[in-house]
Image (cartoon, rainbow, N blue to C red; front, top):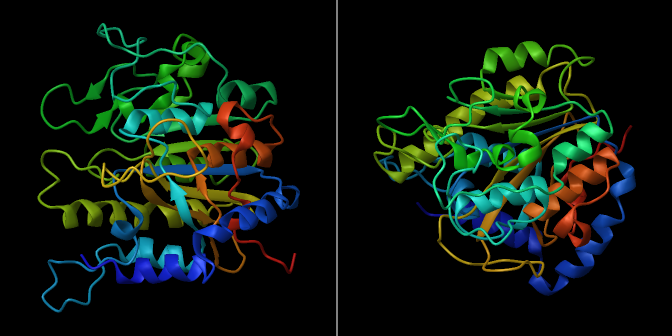
Length: 344
């Protein structure tokens, strides 16, 4: 897949001064955090592809050589906010997910089960540390985690189905790795299976819809791929594009998605394609990935501030008026990648 368009988008946003200018850009963007107070944040996490894989790549299955493999994602990136210099913090998946809600990956470099899984093994992971849920609940901000193909509310199993292709994978559900979430029935009740119709019904009511929603597609739809839906990489990419093409308009078109709401679409890592990183994070980097910010209005914006998953958490925390956790304390934010309607 030729990544020509993605390369042009990234290069244009970086400008002639290149990466050396990013520090000053980031500083200016961080000063804007007071411009926006979120009433709702939705995060969709995709998987295992770098920036040029998901934006502007041509479909090798197309004989004409003109069809994009991710037409919806590419158009969304052009019409919304795009962080062109965003990185995963390490490899593989799990530590990146942990970083998004705790500001740290705690030295994890594997995808092992949660220690709170009833059938956990000896090399499991469990953390008794502050996390985003603690912060949200302290300020009475409603939240939920939606996981496609998870079989039941509060499910602590490592995978589903238990035989055959793995669709729901616990390694993509960071909430169940934290003791004060996984062992609290009231919090477990907010970790739910994802159903688009149910989400649409919930978002019809701005007064009752959760203010923070963390949505994870299953491995057929998050561009990870699994047995039965990974014939080739183009198919994996196209499946994810189709999922977002169906899901994003439902979210953005809802009554609950107001002018002060933002939808972030992020990729966890680039599937070991590189160890590129930014921002002085500990350990190896997780590669150059895309992050897209969608709002109700505002002009498209491309932002080259060096950012990563700690930045995503910092932006959520700042936007909700929460203190920053761990590595988010010093992270650049993504406010410069969020479209703003200057006519408001």
